Image (cartoon, rainbow, N blue to C red; front, side):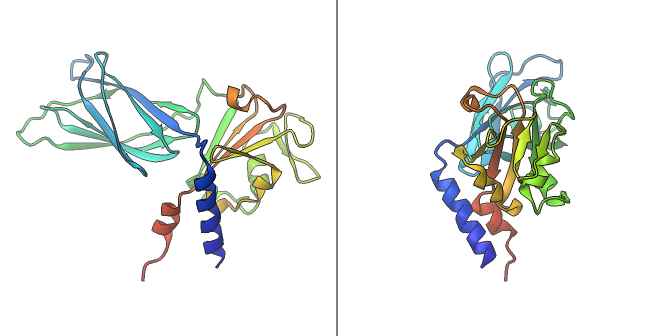
Amino acid sequence: MKHLIILASVMFLNIIATGQNFGEIHGKVIDEHGEPLPGLNVYTQSSSGEIMATTNLDGRYKLKPLNPGIYTLNFSFMGYDTHRLTDINVDPDKINMLKKVQMTRSATDIPEVIIFTYTDPLIDPEETSRVTMRASDIKSNSRRTSLVDMIGSMKSDVKKGTDGELYFRGSRTGAVQYNIDGVKMGANAARIPSSAIGSISIYTGGLPAKYGDTTGGVVVIETKSYMDFYNASPRK
């Protein structure tokens, strides 16, 4: 019964979230000589279907809009082996700039599929005021039973007050803005169960314009889709 209530809550949030916080993947593809490879197809599978892009004359591509989550990219071009890049994280309101992908000419009539696992950089120099925790990190976090405690452990300048509220860099009471699936919510948003969360991002400074009406920090929560719960359910 408890899981059904959580599932219903998440589905409701997904329905009302007309302002969903999407992410993007940008990158560049080169040939074996390091030259741009235009006209190459890059595609991935999302919850809404296949999303595809074609590289331009500079070999660059953009995949958007993408719901926050983990993606696998496929790079396909005639005469070349298909490259598959796995474990690419897409966060809300963020462009993931990938490293260059170098294609390999096929040695046979039947191209091979070459699989690479993508690794996120440890530090994002462009967004030092933003920290993100994903579902896999949440699941192993010792403070996951309390969302406020867990968020308070994400960055040194985020503290939990004696009143149970979060304070960013000494902000006043009630100054923290919560945003769930693109919808601005009150402090009650901190009661959402951790098992329903796909990712949490916090901003302690340098806020995007869409969050500019707050004097404190911002907590951006993306919930799991109902398909995440369905796939995790035991089968009879």
